[in-house]
Length: 232
Image (cartoon, rainbow, N blue to C red; front, side):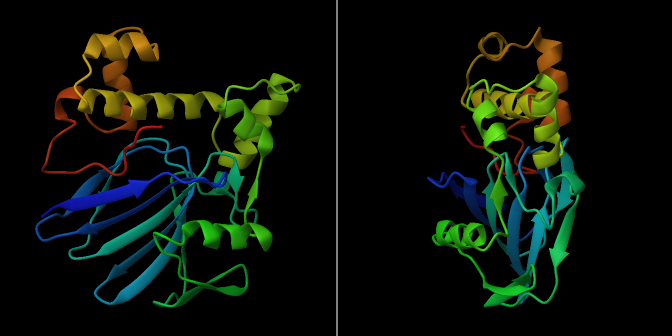
């Protein structure tokens, strides 16, 4: 058994997706796909529980996978911020929360019950109520396709402050992830190029290699699974 991943969408404006996975014997590493989102990750390995806050990832990378471990994550929507652990300072990095147990962990000076796959929304709602999470409505509006009455410079500044990434970088990451999903669904390469606005096949190949870590022909490679990919 390799890495089994399950995920679901959320109706919370603060959550992009909720996921969980488990690892089996024989798997040593995985490809972590680029992501424009910060997230909270909980994992248990050999009876020890760990919690970390991760920032956006600007390119694909290889990540070790411990044997017989379980993982759970809350992927925050783009524009959701954690002011005391700002995501713009965690780009391509993470910070582990010390002293986590199976019951609780410490965050911003308070003990919080460990969230679960089915309780993510209530947990995030409490984070918002207690001021641990915030959300930039401008970033969310632009990503929905709206046009706020602000200068481009102001919008760009809001994106970088909330996410650590420019709007263009987020667009490129989202496009590459969408291309990977379409190709895994057997959509012809030329249709992917046309629909997503790539110049040509080499342009698509460079994007996939940078952000997904695979060429189109290796997306289904079972020897090294990909991290969470999903339809937006």
